[in-house]
Every structure is written in C-alpha cells, then in structure tokens.
Image 1: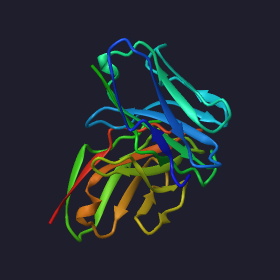
Image 2 (image 1 turned 45 degrees about the vertical axis):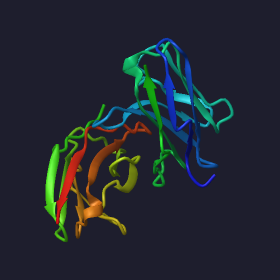
Image 3 (image 1 turned 90 degrees about the horizontal axis):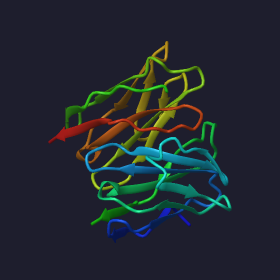
Image 4 (image 1 turned 135 degrees about the vertical axis):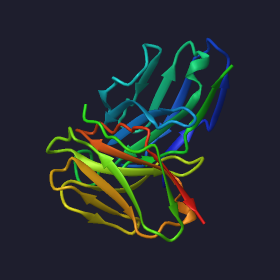
Length: 116
Length: 108
C-alpha cells in the first residue's frame, strides 16, 4: 500500500474483553514499531520488529500485551482482558532500513481504543 | 538509555525563524539525532535527522553542536501550519523512543 495502514480506526470494547489491533506497514519496510499515545502526551514506545523478529518488547506495560509479526509484514498487537487504563491511541510505524541513514519512521493513522 | 531534554513549549511569530533546542548530553557516537513533529489530530511525521554534520532539507535545518551534546531544529520562516509538537529523538540502535516534545505555538 501507499502508506502504513491500521485497523480498525476505532475500537470500543468492554472491560475484560480481548482486542487485536492490526498494522499493515509500507511494502518492503523492514522495521515495524508499536506506540501508545495518551491525550496530550508523546508516543510511548511499546515494541518493535525487524522482519519477523521482535527486537525489543521492554515497553510493553505488562503481560496482557503481546505483539507478533509472523511473516515479517503485517503485525498484530493483542491486549488481553482489557482495562479502562488501556484506553489510548495505538500507533504503528514502519521504516525501510534500520541502522542506516534512511531510518525514517512512517506512521499510520492509529487505532483509537476505548475500554468501557 | 540516552535521553533528550526539550523545553515544554515555545512561541513564535509568523514568518519569523524558530530555533527549537534539544539537549542530549549522554549521546553515544553512533546515535543519529532525529526530529519529528506531530500536528494536531495527526500522527508524528519525520522532519529531519543527522549524525554529525548540519543538515538541510525542504522542511527545516538541523544544527548539531560540535560535541554532539545538543542540537537545534531551525524553521527558517514559521507559518501557522508549523504549529505542532516537535520531538527530538536519539536513534539508539533502532530504539526510537519519544519524549514529551516541545509544543510550538505560532502567532499571526
């Protein structure tokens, strides 16, 4: 696709339900990042992948959060047993060539998650 | 972790230059300095990045101190559309972590 695509655009769920957020990066991009952003704050790093390998998951808040990128392209961020404090904008970004002068992040439009 | 320090907010007048500072005293030799900005209700967008030398592109200029412990993003002529939060980030082995950034207000 032309840009980073995230779905759904909005997700409303009840406390205790599981949710899966999808990110389709720009074709050919090696690195994929997940961020969470609360209103009025900067993006909070969650995790990132190079190809299918999860390189750093130190930003995941707890073990209810997990991410995968099984074929090195589309990624899914899963939140189990959602809580109200999980409500935020979840943003995905991809970059072409990690560790080079072409390391630029391209962000998707995000998924706005609301946990009732 | 290498970290950056930016002022919480700055103001500028339209069509005047803006210098947005960033301190990164714990930068390592291989860290690139990146700048992103986030317009209201949008995702962050890339502005510019550099390693040691000053950099220019169509959006801005990046001035990097000789000791690399600080840098300055320069908008040569601020417009109302430049009102955004500007983030300075150190690319530490792909570890792209954002801070709180500087909220730039541009006054007409």
